[in-house]
Length: 374
Image (tube, rainbow, N blue to C red; front, side, top):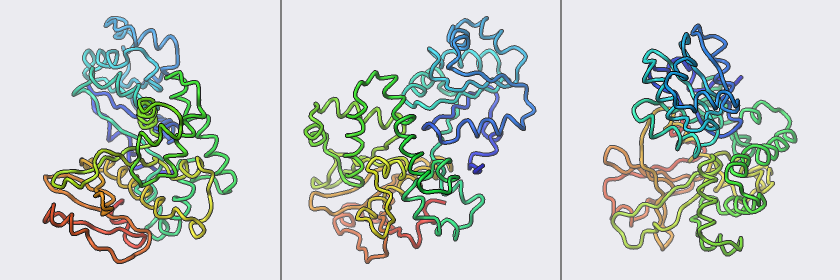
């Protein structure tokens, strides 16, 4: 088992609040939970939102029924909670009427779970978003030398738990293809009644080839022969189901700054490479720079979530192609990060210095990248 930065889970639990754990399928939510339950001394009830009786009871919004359901337990856990109608209202009744009760709800569908849970549980929830294994997770058992030695594997095959524990590269590739077809697209196809999985795969393939570049909805619509609104809807669904993540442009001072487009990254490099079916070594690839930017960006996202670092994130680019890969806004300041695979000479764009004086930009390469993500 690979340790997680969230462990021990006991540290995340608060009486009278719901711990919401969600993220992509197959990232280890069930493992995290089962490891906790194997050692806890709390008297608990574990149910699944897939269970029709659980749906009826918890979704009833009947206070007496829910009180009977919870009576005698110190901990209630509901897995796949997004499948219960009005789950947020049911959970609210639990914590309001049992102030000493601990409640955990898990799910794999962001747009379902967050929409149904969010508003009723304002002030009554803590959220853990579980990603594929982070470098911070791996650093619990591996030292920085080990992480550097395995860097190519993380960039080519990604960091889903089963990928990391599989020794044979052929088996890793087979698993990643299965992951995309059987799990990652499953939520969208089932919940949104989308009848053309091929269209989603074609869209993902276009995004994979445009990694690190601004994406034009109009261009995507033309290439896919669908309307722009449908492109926007599909991109939103792919983001809400944890396959991709978007980054918008920063614009404060210059008319020449690019802001109307977004960049899209994949939550996992292995998934991206599976979509284009390219698992070649880094030495033979022409997209190493793109993979590097995706890898560092996502590891930074994971670290900030685990360490509770709250930022507004952007890229910065001008129409004359001056750029900075990532801008974080926190504590009233802007922090720029440029990601280069090799330690090339890098000069901060003079347009940035003029528009945002006093806001530093740091270059991260394979020599110093761990400073940013551990």
